[in-house]
Length: 345
Image 1 (cartoon, rainbow, N blue to C red):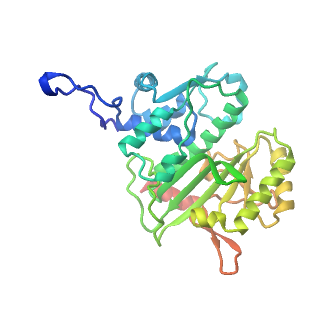
Image 2 (tube, one colour):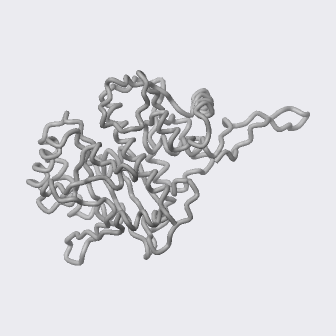
Image 3 (cartoon, rainbow, N blue to C red):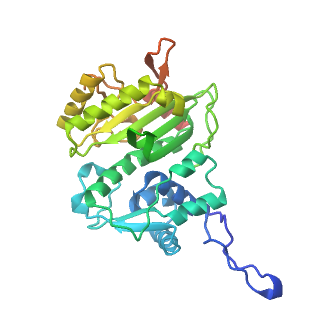
């Protein structure tokens, strides 16, 4: 992970003059951090450590973060710990003002210049922020950190499993002029052809899905109980209509499963009632942040319930297929036992 992608020394040119580098030096670990920040938009320093620096000291991580911030590749802010709900995930550090990091436009330009994002759509979608801009409001940051936590948990599960061939993840993904998802995650799963696990996230590279692979498409919506229920009803109608129009099949090869995270079970029940009213046959699911987290395998294997009745358990690792009659059916790809057996190989 520490392999250097750009030279850090100053090579001598004509007349013995040292030639300064065109861009700041960057290692594979730092490049991977830029890719992660662009996809998740915001990350606690503790998230950064668990996902990329767990094999070194926290001091080493802080040196990297400070160097990248000084080079203008990433930005940093703080959020008051007391303003964050417990549901924002276990990655919260026990600090009064935890540090939060994100990607700058300059950091995205480095990824582009080095050709580290082979998929053009992934590169274009990366989220950046000018550190000189207005400070992010606490409520917005709290929401975005919860989106980041859920996506990070899915990514860590995908990284560890030989069954996952690739993963696409991006927060604030626009599918249509009428819809912007809090996050889109697409897992490409291939039980018949396990991947060699090497500790790296198997990022999607733009290649088409092979015949022996299956895709799980998840559209995340994090609810903070601040929107009127009528807004949630509108989201159900938009998702239903885009599905019927084949928009998701056109973009991604098939329908998406909406995943709601609600702050409380009561709010989850209210969301279920709204969606069931607008879309009785919906395959969307809902959970709370606490319920969505499996103690060993994270958000991918949490407790999710179908919105059409608010009660039926629905595993996320299932493929949605459009039949010849236009109806959508679900096909489970892997049970938890099979997932654990693959991890143990």
